[in-house]
Image 1 (cartoon, rainbow, N blue to C red):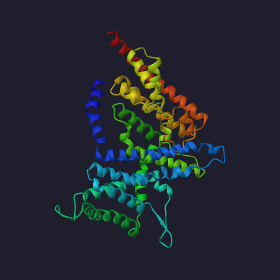
Image 2: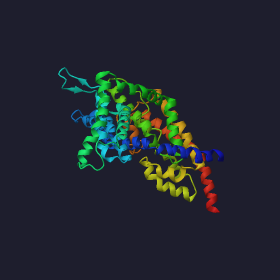
Image 3: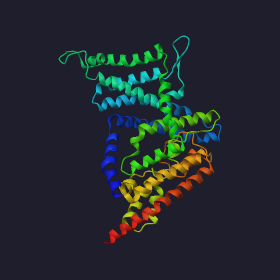
Image 4: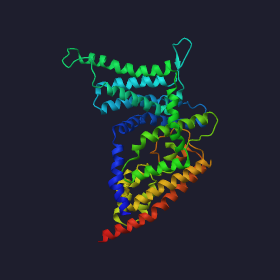
Amino acid sequence: MNGFMNFLNTKFAPRAQKIANNGWIVTIKNSILEVLPFIFVGSFITLLNIPLNFWKWWPNLAPISSFTFGLVSIFIAFLFPFNFMEHMKLNKQRIIAGLSSVALFLMLANPTWDKSGSIISYQFSELGAGGMFVALVVGIYTTLIMEAFGKFSFFSDDTSMPDFVIAWFDSMLPITVVIATGWLLSDILHFNFYQLIVNIFSPLATSLDTWWGFTLFLFFQCFIYSMGISGWVLAAIDQPVMLAGIAANAREVAAGHAATHIFTSELVYSFPWIGGVGCTLPLVLLMLFATKSKRMKALGKACILPSIFNINEPVVFGTVVWNPYLMIPLWINGIVLPLITSLWFKAGLSPIPHSLMQMWYIPFPFVTWIVSPAISSLILLLILFVVGGLIWYPFLKVYDNSLIKEEKA
């Protein structure tokens, strides 16, 4: 065990952290974080639209969600090159890079022209969460072009031309290259680049929607979290898939079909992750009522309020991270609870969430009922809570006994 822990501490964790600190990964993560307020607005509208199920006179607020959450791909297309230019200290090009990326994304998002050639239309779904991978690819390409021309200038250093005029002319060439790429692909070659990117990433989305993909990904989230690496480093992978999944579920239900995508934030943070990643609310309650050491009881008191609102950094970083006693049950929960959850929903025992609800801080069981209003959903939640607590208990007791011995000594 000591050898394994030493390997994790000296080999795996530093390399994982190095990947997490890569400029491209950090830029993707930060860009997704910056659109969260728009996603939260969409979630809030989901809450406000609940009375529409009971009162026909209640106004339909869905258009507000459509023009916030429904445009996230456009936002990402702008933010990624903007943020990366800032990261590379090429601030003069960040606005131009963001706008060029948006233009290229819209060119490749399969617009339909009318006969006059003056009116274009889009499938709304392609501008929303479903197009996030396309937006990221477009953003990366635009960033590479802008970075390549970052040091280029038509003018010498001793020119008398005003800076803003220099910036105008120096931006024209990379803008032309970016937009000409879209023109070549869409107008000349009639190549559906959008669908190509969707097809490339569809195996990832499909695998995460299986019981084994769902379970393995959530286990890995717990695994790196036990070493102090936040699951947000995986945002570049999971957020586009999760957001596209909930958008697809909404379309399926609107078309009269059953929702099928289980790898969504709405499902993950409303069922297995009670109190936060790894199901830590049962752990905090056990620390409060089933331990005897002063340290555990004090931590339990300090962590109970954040845990109720699904904020578990205090308990994870306060007692789980790099603690062999509690890392192991976190890993076990990372396998067992997602497995139960995925098999439960794959068996059709509860309705799969289909409405946007990113307000993960709503306490249980309310958040569960909002996303999946069924008695069977509450039964599943109870099963997950009990199983999670049973997994934490023996490891916590062993750790608590060791602390009691230290306190007596």
